[in-house]
Image (cartoon, rainbow, N blue to C red):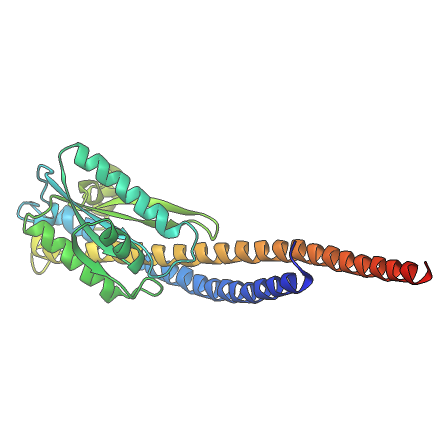
Length: 296
């Protein structure tokens, strides 16, 4: 049975750990609010970008020659996994990698070659430990991604697609729902889905009432420039969603850790009180036994 001093040391150690988890919870909470604000600021830009691309595609006489829209028989797929640079975030990293590995098994069963691109130290270390060769990896910005980081990733993915090294690019990341819920999303980035460039008939009629635009240069040339920007925007949106999800998962994990530490401290305090009472009882018995021995 543990002594009172041993139990005191354990309680002191757990209390120090709880201070750390409490501090990490508060830091994650503050970062989560900033990440949510960045997502809300990003949405109008992304929506406007989509409207501009759709309008330009509608004015184009032909979409031929646009490589990022070209569809080929899928022989090779690039999986882009977005993970974090740090742990202590519950199942945040594990569920992305689990989904990515399941997707890889499905593709290989269909005879498709898989290439890996990964963001985050956790994803990179897991893949290299399993012996995978990485086409590219990026680290150091999972907490606060910048648009330049999305540009770097988008350029590499577009390069692989345009060179014919891959026929499809799939993004796997955590979509932020709430601080308690992060949903794994599998999104096709390349080729750009054709349905994004299609408009419902009533939308076409409404646009016709506003009149036609004169494009300079030609709509096809404008669209050629807009498509890479669309890929960058989608990757940036995914990075922001992943950053918010990471902070939400870490805040929840640290809150649970603090609660578990409190429960453990209560249990150990009860054990310590019982051990102290047992020591006092034992001392009383020894005193009584010694008094009896002297009077005998």
